[in-house]
Image (cartoon, rainbow over all chains, first blue to last red; front, side, top):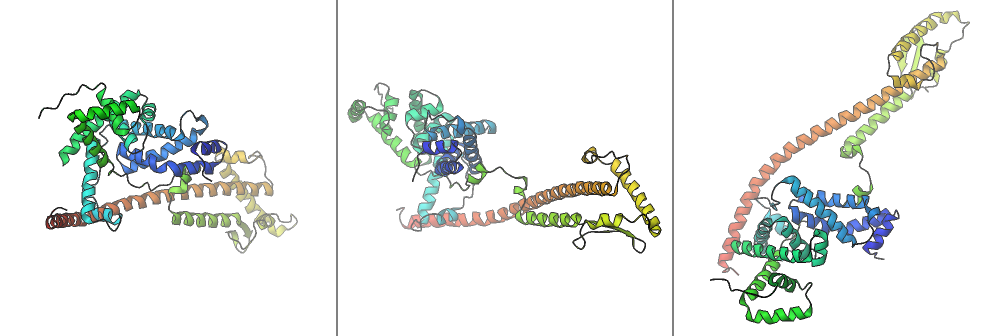
Length: 186
Length: 252
């Protein structure tokens, strides 16, 4: 039987640690992806991801279900990402190694994919990473939450603690910057 | 080319809402549909934003490799950072030391003098038996004198011990001790010594682990440098091949 997030939370609060483990397994990947795209470093993203679940576990008793569990989790993760960015005092550029291992990249993909496809996709990925790195944190976060996590404008507004109209403006401005930056890379 | 002017009300918000199909009532969508037929700027921008979105879709995050289950639900132990082989070795050593100390056998006789034996060969309970000799046996007088001297020496050492050790004994250390009391105190000292040895062993293991880790970092750095060179060369060759193939196939 598949439990909903809220049911698992309820069982976790009741002392069923296995339920919390299910929540971790369910949300680990999205939270890690969010952290990675915001701060751009795999190792730090893993730390943020782990810390997110640790904090969630400790604060589970205080979760009253006003928001969805996923939104609550996203909020914790975003706060940690924000702290990380401030602590680092540097532009959160997504950093790929200069000599990226294309062979390994190709090996990890479907065998039908040609080496040209791999190289092209790699170039495209790097272009996106560079363009995203140009965005201010608020715009980048809004775009990540919308594009990669499918949150609604209202959910993003709730997470960011800003009006819905501000979310739309951030998305528009962010897309405009990406349009310009990606146009340069062509 | 100068950008075409557009006066559509709240244009940017509506365009984003239209693009994502989020928070836009049907009536507004239809209105913007109509607007797009006449406004090249909005049409172009919408097409470009769609193109941006399709390119964003190519940005995949790496696989998350760590499972948090165990770390969330169990508190970390200090020895978790020590390699398994070292933990096993430490456990064996502690067991050996403990077992030996637990069977400490202190004996004295005229032939062999004072002897201290450890191991499983003799139960520890035998030690007090050896220490308690019949008072009527005058041949054992030197034995008792020397034992008394040793007792006195141990008493002095015990008085110099940490307060915790003295507190462990309920008897006034300056008072005359019975043999049982004496052996009990020896046992307390041995226990304390065992604890100290365990701590020292743990510290040494940690130091060893740190040394190994540092060495491993150095080795990895050398290895990465070597691999990086090979990889760079390979990547350059691959890029050349890709360009060549692209040229041959006409960029298809």
